[in-house]
Image (tube, rainbow, N blue to C red):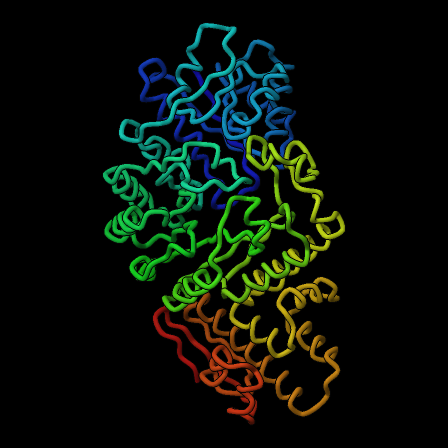
Length: 520
């Protein structure tokens, strides 16, 4: 028997790892009914030429073609299934995953799929393959017992050796009930991978020289004990890889920060919004000052962290979205990722969409067009601001200087992003000079202020370039010594000028040897 477990990714990138297929392959090999099957893991990327892919899959030949459906690939899966059935009506197609679970009826209506698995599929995949009852189409999965399930990595490491990174599941389930998230409709109990398996998988990653690991746990620090156990295992087993975690800022502790500071990590924080009315609609809470205090603590420990925001939420609007953006910038994240609201099928928000006046794009992405509070025009404006944030803050790595520039211009971050969205090019220094000219002040202090801000931006860029290129000498012209410019972070630009009123521009050489930064 030949089984294809097909993965369709958004794009070719390090996180595009076929974890679902790996889990299913391990489950099939462990089950006596399918342990001798020839199981393959074809991978494809969007955009997909479904006709060409179908031709290839048919030529290679399989008894079962299995798909994991998500919002980003469901349309392509349905199209590919139609192509496959047109070529051979007798082949067997199985679909599972979050989208198939939430919209099993829609997948069934297509008439293309012989089996639909709702929920976690590893305990059902062998039954779905071997089920002799042709009338049984939909299979409801049971909650997986991690004490009995096997690690998915040993069986597939050679097969997927070309990947730059790996997805590593350490827990399933979420203790929160965010109305926009499908996770909230799943098992409320958080189930963690057993400690011995955690260590075993880390050893597998180390043996295979895995350098980038995305940790799958909706809220890694929901339990400090769980988080500390995983971090201890990482530190003792495979500390040299780079790990990415999703966390809740308010739950961070000094102990966790200390453990993380000894590793190469990126932390992602789902803030979403600061608007109390919108927070209530999505079943979330926020303690603003605690959030900021915890972010400052993470910054003090030298941790890299990003913040997620959503625009288009019910009871939100463009003005309050901008306030959320200003708050996010004030927390000093390394990156800010912003997304329009997607009203995913099966979520609580989808059930109440009519009442909230949410109009979305429908299948397959369900992106919000507008709602009772967030107009279509405001959604378009938020999209432009989002592009500006990505270009100016993220791609320019402006986190080290953006607040200083905004303060010098007496502008809110969101207002500065709006201006950047209208700027003629994406050059940050050119934009800052233009904004100073637009401010209308031509006095000496303003000239000195611009000079200082420009030097601070150049110094920040030079330091980042040196850290990114160990062994390479970086030259930069500055109007103050680097250690003096660093004081801009603690002082307002005006206070800085009062304390350091003059300086002569000179050239500096910056060199990072892998351990220390040298400035001459």
